[in-house]
Amino acid sequence: MKVETKLKEQFKDRLLVWSEASLGVKFDNLTQFQRSRQMISFFVQEVLEKLFPGIVPDDEGELESCIVDGSGDGGADLLYRTDDGQVLVIQAKYRGKDASESAESVGRVCDVLERLYLATQGKQESLHKDLIELANQIDWEEDTFRVYFITTARTGDSVKDRVKQGLVQIAELPDLGDRSEFRYLDQSLLNQELREAISSADFSDRPIVIPMIADSNESPWCHFEGEYRELYIGEVSGAILASILQKHKASLFTMNIRDYVGDSKTNKQIINTALADPSNFEYFNNGVTAVAGKIVPDRDAGTLTCDRMSIINGAQTVRSLLAAINRPGGTTHKPVSSVRVLFRLMSFGYPAEVPFVNEVTKYNNTQNAVKVADFRSNDEVQKDMARRFSNLNLGGRKYEYKNKRSDKKRNSIAITLEELTKAVFAFQFGPDDMWGGTNKLFDASATGLYKKVFVSPDSPLTESEFNQISGTFLVCNEIKKLWEEYRKFLRSKQMTMPPALERKGLIYYAVGELERQSYAKQGWNLDHDLGKLTKPNSWLTEADTPPRHAILRAFEISIRVLSQQYDSKKKNDSGFKHRNWFRDQETLRAINEGLELALEFGVPPRIWP
Image (cartoon, rainbow, N blue to C red; front, side, top):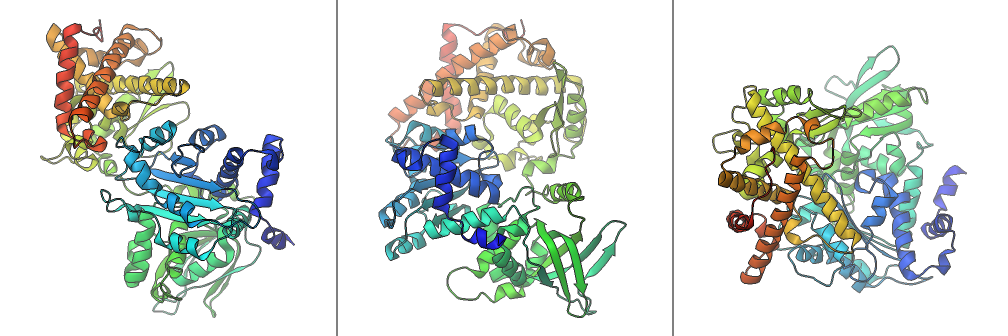
């Protein structure tokens, strides 16, 4: 009965009930605009959040701020970007009974990334100002994109043809196709997606039989038995894992506390390896880890039969293997049958050991893609930074310098290695994008930029070196807060952030250069004053201390100069490109000249009077 109930679930019916419960008004009495917003909210909260929680806003308030439906939406009713660079775009169409979707509407959504990209370059001015502001937060050369078109209509052949063509590519971003994914969900597919989301809350109510691959000694697995649980390790066919997902769907990931979907580029790499290089797949992939409430081994048959089984690490691998099998162009992709995947299966007592499984899941899923900054985490200078920051506090809250990625300690103020290095470098020299990018910033060789921030990576810092670096970072952090407050103020007035101010790294530089010129003009010692700011309680506990007032004044002058320089360049340069302005070192020279002129009218207060 339980399964039959799930199979009968209809997206449209559930939407109407959910909407009336949340608004207290019948869905039929809503405007088309309100229906669209409710449809998006329902899809995000009741479908995507259950299937792919890593790509959606964490709370309703944030969700509401990302919905830009109505005039000027440009084919994007919702636009959201996660901190780790995953961009979600949704267009929703609530259609009447027996309505069919149009190929024109689908085509408009397939153009949406191009439209948003052009908007960040000062074009597409008809787009909603909130949408432009959200688009300006995207890193177009690094982020991954998931574009959804959801509709309660039916699908005809012309729409199917347009869906097959996919997203419009952007000439300036040749690898965008590897970083983007388009999903079209009509009434039938929305029903399936909803049922899968509902099933994700429960284990499959059917046993899962896993045929293992025997080794050269005809042993199908290694078996380890502890005091409370068992562990099986062996190899399984990629085609078997794909068929299990096909049959049991999202219930296969019930115990995965964060079913991370991975980035589109990695998904495609997994698919391509499975199809083009199946014999080496196992060597390139981390494998799959699963738990089960009960495991029945059959050595003669070479099978493990599982009750209450859930994959807790490797969801991206399994989903990609199924995608490889279902890839258009043939009924069967035989290479996937040749793929071998390392498989770990652990028993657990349900429900008593659910907390333990959550811990296992957590630690299995902290093995994220390695960032280039991670390679600097064991430098002696970074260990020294962590030790020194641990001795600082603000109002009793300790600072925690995270030279390695880990969970933030409770009631601490976290500072990451990457965040600090980027900010201090930008304050001194300009955003790293203008000097070769993040890879070069964390390159400790003679041609890299890392030693411009940390002169001797293999040695602890001197007291004065730490004071200058930490003081500079705390100034940048204060600038960041002012920038965020300014953006919030503009939004309250229905205004957008000036395009010159969309990236805080350039503001760090402008404030830094203003202070360098101002201090040189007055004969003051900037390094000395920055070093004084390393004691947060001496200037950050009250709102209007002299250092905060001085930084505010420098911020106000700097953003005015940045906007003037941007507008002048855009007006006078026929080949002006918004993106290039943030990457061209000529921009820094123009800013320097603008700041020099501004100082003719007076200097900002000294940071440490």
